Image (cartoon, rainbow, N blue to C red; front, side, top):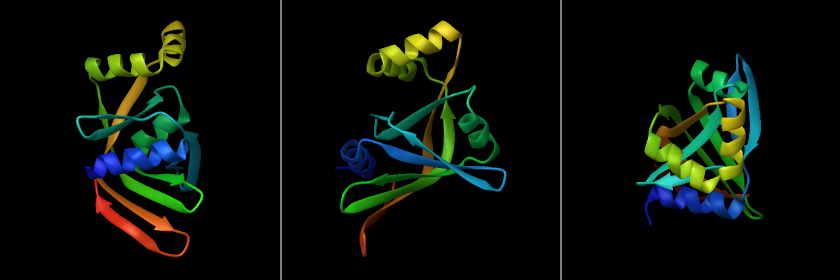
Length: 133
């Protein structure tokens, strides 16, 4: 299993995860569920009309936090935006209702992955695994 697959599997098991950004000097977190693994890259997305997108543009350093009953994972890196019609088509397959809403309102989805990613999986008291992604 590749490191990107390990992160993806942890997110699958956690189901919901928290995406952490900054707004000026104020930390901001929000729950996310969407991600997709393509060619060993883990992609996320947000609407270009959302505050999250503006925060990512202003400061692309982020952390993803996912929690399971006895473990949690931190995954951080620098956002790299991607414009790719094939990836957008995959999102349409995965989330047709959401993309229909985006189309109806003329919204744009910004897809991205994390460059220079680093993940650590911890129990409540110990480091279980640490790796670059």
